[in-house]
Image (cartoon, rainbow, N blue to C red; front, side, top):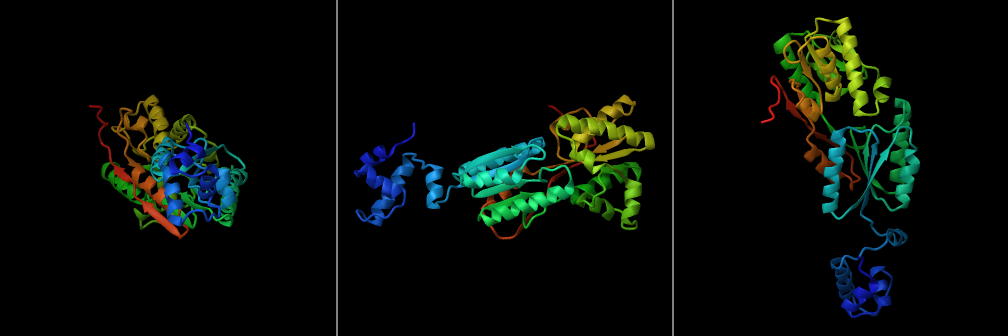
Length: 343
């Protein structure tokens, strides 16, 4: 049951109106600053919580955070959000977790949160439009809105002046080295042709080749529009099944497939098994994210696991700052030649 001003007044030996004036930081000359502080501390110990509306009107700090994410984000993002909520709670911050479907009016939603007294924002991108140009434009509009209202923000993965990201380049290099040691250069990465850091890392493994030559020889291109249309894990798995079949039709002798996510690899495993190929024996597989269903699927899939603890700590720590920030958190690189044991 919420503590009342009357209960605080009785414990403090003051009138209700006096306690109200003190807790609402209104000018009063009936007690000194030390006595005022005692009342404020007593209210805190008793669990008194002022209404946000009152805090906003006074311009007080609300210690409120909004985490904006897409409705269909991966399970890793959901786990990361849960870790962040625990850390924010330890800092006595209140949180909104806002899941936005595609083509939402994120600007209007952010303005509503600002009007509710939200001071910090954690932005999980890319934002929520069908095409990349609209995504970039809306994201920049969102940043301008937050800055204009003196809100702080931190972006995860989406490029911004303040961002936390993971560098998957070392995982790509190590996994490519593993593939080459087992199957030579007879492998493909399944990636969109967009100049990503994964593509750059792949190119670094073949310094004698141009980017176009690497793309031609080692990348099976995925359509960005097709990836953007994937709304759930089921959709991603089905797409992995589809593109694996297309790749095998073009190159039936391929010996290594490096997917852009473990979820895509899960669909690929189904396709390979239907065609009589044994993952890990007839063909090497790798992905990203250390998705549990792939980890224990019965076939070895190398991967790069998110350091969720480090990511959560960085995002929470940076959410209240305004200084330029680019914090890079390395993932854990996992090379699997055998199936994960359940013992």
